[in-house]
Length: 97
Image (tube, rainbow, N blue to C red):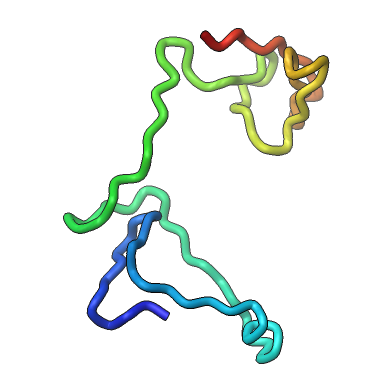
């Protein structure tokens, strides 16, 4: 539970004291959920979310449908290429220096 003195606001990284017990969750059968607001503004006392700069190349995308890399795309050929989940195309990965 979040203490009354500590307000977590909307940030992803909350430094409030939380307490969670899987045993109590399964024993009581109370539904558990999380509310996520990825574009919410942060409060002054919150940590800023980390931002990755991919440079001029930008994030990895499929050459055919231009979909961004997601966890469901499969790397093949030792990680040199990936198989797009959406259009089924195979795209060469770019060397990271």
